[in-house]
Length: 257
Image 1 (spheres, one colour):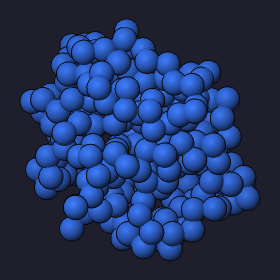
Image 2 (cartoon, one colour):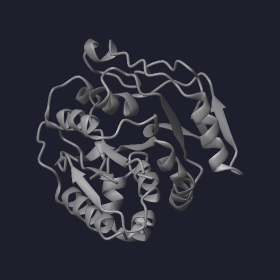
Image 3 (cartoon, helix red, strand yellow):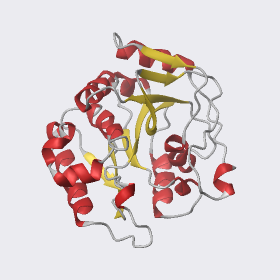
Image 4 (cartoon, one colour):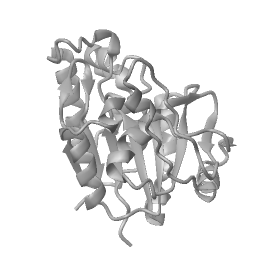
């Protein structure tokens, strides 16, 4: 049986959802190349909780969880259907971890900003899994390992964040990236290519470059779920491999031809 690929998408600014640029075009091309999934399980940087939760509504709303952007971005609606059955399956796989099925939670911009170019018809069902910020990086990775069977069930696992994300260090008037951001992006890619997940989980061991790049960690943690879903020896492909200001758009896929 062919396994469904698994993706980590550097999402950057929510404006990428409505702008025609190299990154959004790459997402669109990706949606055309991928085998059509039965559903998407999305792990976004923008849903942080105490305790694990999954969206369980049939018609989740579009959440505009940002400020200071043009009205056109707030006008976006991404009416992808929910998938309560998949939400229950996620809870089953994560057992005995308690998982709250949340019927009211919608889809945040970390989810719809990347899926809108990929699946513009919003016709692929989606479930979001929260980031339980009470957990260690190793525990996040361990949860991701439990989700691997979904790849045999036609579910596309997507982590949406940024390998490098430090808004306090970003100056968008001067988009040249700091040296530490470029160095850490390359370090992470090298470790991913060689399948060395240990240092990426224990990222504090990677020194100051990691500390500045990962910063508050919510944009990095979705990567750990994606790494955990990799099969042994499975090749990685990188795309959108750009760092600007102090944000990395670098994205990757496992299981692509």
